[in-house]
Length: 250
Ligand SMILES: [Mg+2]
Ligand SMILES: [Zn+2]
View (tube, rainbow, N blue to C red):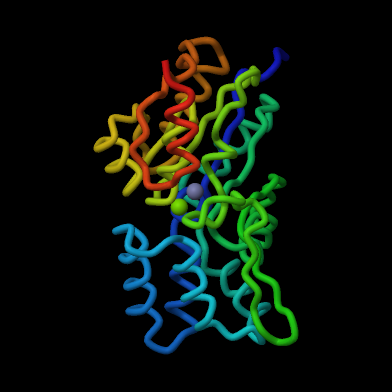
């Protein structure tokens, strides 16, 4: 087997799995949660609050004593996106380094992945219970960015001497920071709109079938892997992704 030419980064909520689990949890476990979750999501999407702010508002409403219950509920109520198993199987068969990169929370991501037999590294925010109350941690945050929880830009940004291209698949507004710097982007929903507006090239998807087909074509040399993307235009609000995009330009 030849050496992999790219690494794969998969968003979790709304990408690898169908729903946004955080929104589902607030809707299910908080009185009037549906309205509150939608409100926070709208504020986040329209850029009026940061992801950190959105999380702290939502986490404040959840009951720390029900963490295990919420994790079990998530496992039962979170379907994979159609074609996810085939995609992950293909990536594993070709030894493509694959990482789940999520602005969501570890306490539901890990059990959901386990349930489906996915043994994938995860970079996400973390929820801990200390003395009966929640502590929301951003272990993959950027030290100087107050906007993002996890810094998807830092993870998607190829290092100057990195031989692997970075391929990112996502759906949400906070995925724009990864899409701005990744070499190759698969996009659905809000990320697709953002890529259109920002002139970021992407492959659209809904189910994973076309993603798997495209990646198989690259791996089997039926189609050339797209070249490293030339950046230089920064359009997002995240100072980290802006900086990377502008610096990597022609
Ligand atoms: Mg998402
Ligand atoms: Zn940021």
